[in-house]
Image 1 (cartoon, one colour):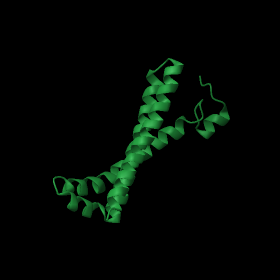
Image 2 (tube, rainbow, N blue to C red):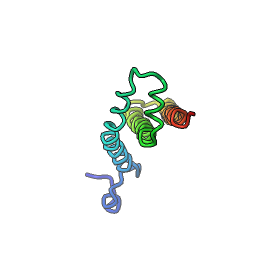
Image 3 (cartoon, helix red, strand yellow):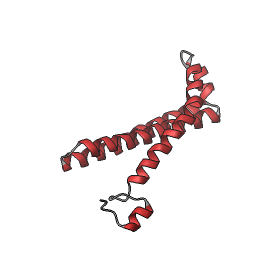
Image 4 (tube, helix red, strand yellow):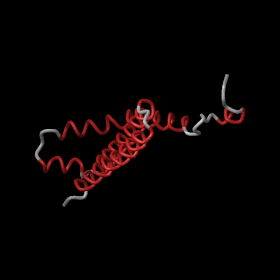
Length: 126
């Protein structure tokens, strides 16, 4: 027996009206990471162990800088979605759950902006 109205079943939304969107967003971010990963890790592996000047020259190329920024922002978006599900499923105290959800959102945003800023600093360095 379902608690959804016929209209809600047709629209594909759960009781909170965001479960399907969250699920799709998580899956699309995972697919994006799978596509971006080789383009991120190959230049990253080439840059490992190189002097700073060579690393900067690799990431000064716009393609490498854009892929690195897109990869890092997608990683932190995907991480936020996953941690949100874990907190919502396993933390039952309402105040603690709300606090952790805020901390997860702010923490992943901070890390994402720090990664994007770091990549921009390398890409635009003289």
